[in-house]
Length: 420
Image (tube, rainbow, N blue to C red; front, side):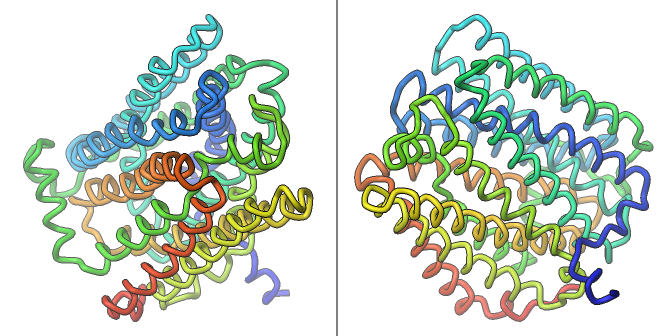
């Protein structure tokens, strides 16, 4: 029985009441957040009918994410992190409410949507590095891989429920209800962060200006293992994340309705479903010391899954249902691989950093983790216009395999890296 239990997620971090409240609040909040993730590209595609416009969410999301992710990390290394979480969570509530207002009024303005999306990403860019930086103050380092896996599992579980609910409800209720649900669920997280203890910075140095950001980046230069972890994740996300193509693939390749529907929901939910499966059976992650090797192998699996996904899309016209099942299956495999990679990369970063720079390094982490897919949205959107959705997806997956293997050869220290 002990061996069987070891297969399942390590729940030891949940014995900490502060982590447990944040984790439980995420169960509620993440569903609403994923409704917005689904609604924004679906609304843009419904207005324009073009993947290139959907791909613009990459640019409009990336710029504020870079600016406020890096600066937000500096803020998280200067101000009390509980206060910062309270302010930014309130900001996310306001921006989500504005999404609801524009949809309820039927404005159908792409540029307004993109502007609100940028504002939301600015608050997100400050909130997320702060949220991650508090974990080593709440938990011992040996529990950080398990805590990262638990957080990823909840996020991805919501990312299943959100697209499934959102994709099915968009044709019935419209976009405004999805945005309203997101607004209301965010109050759960606001309540959880309000109950955190004061989290002042240990050994705070300087002010949260440009120099502080530069100092954080300079700290990274002395840690090539951490830099390589960022590089391989960027490779995986930029070249291997075809989510901007899901509206077009669902509509054109698999015959779904233009404004959403079941196939659209299944495509969006498949990767999170894989991540949840990976999280549920993540008990082994706490026992792996060769964390660098685990990251590389996970990303190679991700790239292979995305390549086969592209092949399935290309063959969808001839073998409709079998290729849909294969495409969804490959997204599930990719999601599981991504969960494993993210859990180890986050643990590597949190355990290697001093508290005084942890916020800034988490800012870089958030920029990479969330910024990579934003770049991918733009790259895949325009690549699909040139070569089609199948070639854009399959070719990206193959590039992930080649480039990741090349990095492992060039930086053998990363392949050999062992965690604590």
